Image 1 (tube, rainbow, N blue to C red):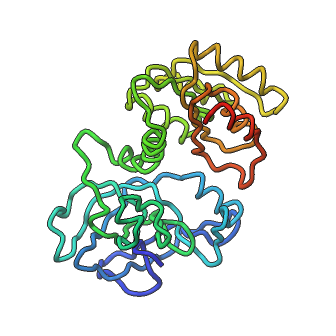
Image 2 (image 1 turned 120 degrees about the vertical axis):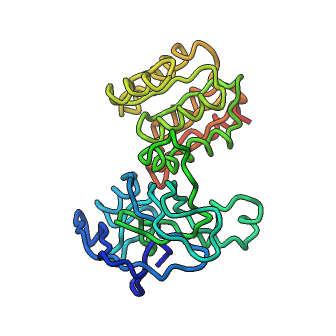
Image 3 (image 1 turned 90 degrees about the horizontal axis):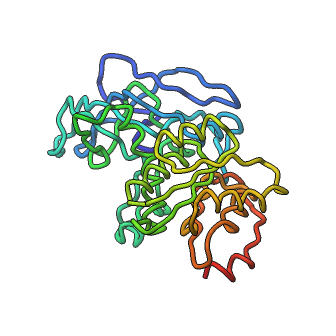
Length: 302
C-alpha cells in the first residue's frame, strides 16, 4: 500500500487511528487503520477535511473505475487537508501545527515524465484511494512531507481540501492555453465543471458559458461567475438545437470547449459548438468508449 497507510507498523500515537474502509459494494465501515512508521522525510497529518470525489462514488457503487478494480478492503478519499502532528528528522519546511493541503499522488521522481515536470503521468504513480493504495479518509495519515503544502491564513481547511479538484480545472486551462482572448464553453456544471469555470475566469477568459441538465447546478454556476447558463437535455436528438442555443448565449465564437462530463452527447456538443480552429478539451471521464463525429470536427478544428 502507499504512504497513506499500510497493513503493518505503527506510528506510536496513543489513540487508535480509524478510517473509512470500503469493504464491498455500498459497504463502508469505520475500522482501525494502522499507520506506517514515520520516515525522515515524512509527515504525520491529522485529517480535518476530506472531499468525496466521483471516483470514490464509483468505487463504492461498483468496486471499480475504468481499469482500477478494488480487490481487497481499501480506505477511500483523496481530496484532503489537515494539520501537521509530527515531522521526520529531515523535514525542514513544516512544523507541528501547520495547516496543509495534501497532494494525493506519489510519483516515482525518476522517470522521464517526472523529470519533465509531468509527474501526473508517471506510470508508477501511487495515488490515494486508487487500488491498491489506501486513501486519506482517516483520523491521521503519513505522507511525504514535500507533498504537503502550507495553507495561507485566509484559506480554510475545507478550501485546502478542494485544491486537488481545483487543480483539474487549472491543468485543463493550462493545456488549452486559456487567456484574455479566449471565450470558453464548459459542459457540465458538477464540481469539476465549476472548478474549470473558476479556473477559466482566473486565467482571464472574458466570457464563459456553461451548460447542464440541472437547474440548481446552473444557478450555482451563475453565482460563481458564468456569463450565461444553458439548460440542455440528455437526448442526442437535441444536439443541433442546443448548439444553436450555446452559440447565441456566447454571442461570439467558442474558442475552447471543456467537456467536463465525458459522454457521447456532451463531446458531440463540444465538437459542434466550438469554432473552426478552436480547441476541445476532454476533462470528464463518463464513458470509457465514446462514439463522436470526429472526422467532421477534424476538418474544422485542425
